[in-house]
Structures are given as structure tokens and as C-alpha cells.
Amino acid sequence: VQLVESGGGLVQAGGSLRLSCEVSGVTFSITTINWFRQAPGKQRELVATIVGSDSTNYADSVKGRFTISRDNAKNSVFLQMNDLKPEDTAVYYCNTYRGFNYWGQGTQVTVSS
Image (tube, rainbow, N blue to C red; front, side, top):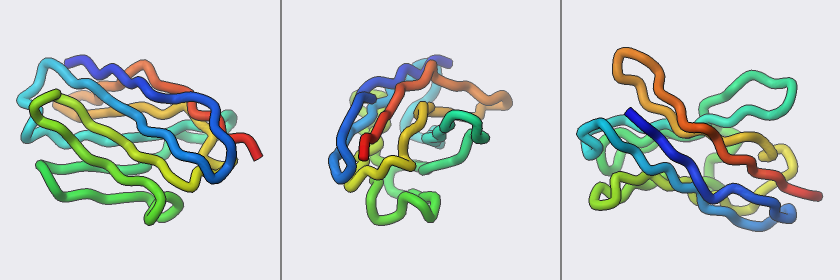
């Protein structure tokens, strides 16, 4: 199983970014995919989850601002992040559990005030 994130960067508060996670080694369409983030000095936290094609869950801190989606033809999951805040600054990881937690390498998101 491999997960590869992309799309991070530096953005001003109120801006938007779209993260991508390309997944291989699984039957993608039925695989639950999560986005986590970890800020400096803090524990890794769950941000969003997509189960199947249309069941999604979000952390309270990002509800209404972030949207998780998937494209099964591209074996990819996306995290659209709008109205970004400085407290969203973190390394973002995509993850799946297949008897073991698999992680991507992470992508840095920095939001300046």
C-alpha cells in the first residue's frame, strides 16, 4: 500500500488549497481514506474521513470549510480547504488502515496571518 500526498504550500489567511492523495495497492473504491494533520508540538489529529463514495466525516474545527472527496478513476482522494486559518498550519497526511496504519509522507500547509 502506498499513499502519496501533494498540493501543500504557503497561503494567506482566508485563502484556499487543494490537497491530493494518490493511493495504490488497495481496492480503492471501497477503501476508507483519512486525512490527518500534525502541527509542531501537537499530536496528530483526524481532520476528515471518506467511506465509500459519499459518506464523509469532519473534525469540528474544519466543518464547513474543508471538503473531502474521491475520484475512483484516478485512485485519488482530495481535501479542498477553504477559508484557511493560521491554526490550520500543519503537515497533512493521508492514511488508510488495512490491518496496519499506512501513511503518506505528508505535505506541509502553512497559513500566514
